[in-house]
Image 1 (spheres, helix red, strand yellow):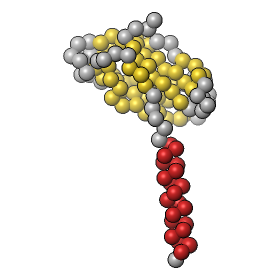
Image 2 (tube, helix red, strand yellow):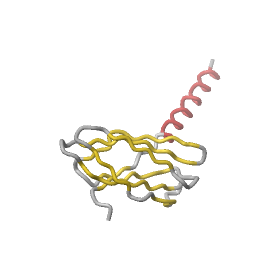
Image 3 (cartoon, one colour):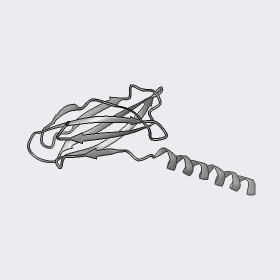
Image 4 (tube, one colour):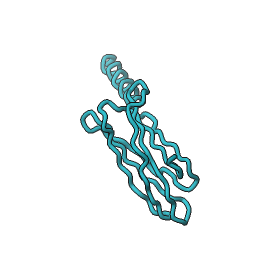
Length: 118
């Protein structure tokens, strides 16, 4: 009976440890008061990271913004960053963006949204 309990505890501890390691924080910075990140998620495609985000304009007017992705390795070193990409977000209408790293080994990312690409 004790072996079953000890095994169960070990499996439970490993599951909790893996769950805490797998839930790494998402990174996004918004430089505009109207555009919000409604949701963001990532998947791994071979050696490449793919990020999908839903952006939403909380205001009622049309918002012209730009965004870029930065890709980092496991140690936090910047591998690459995309060019600024323009987006137009109409009031209360979500827009979906999807980016794939072009350098293998990216494990972290930052989504930057701004009104100014300079």
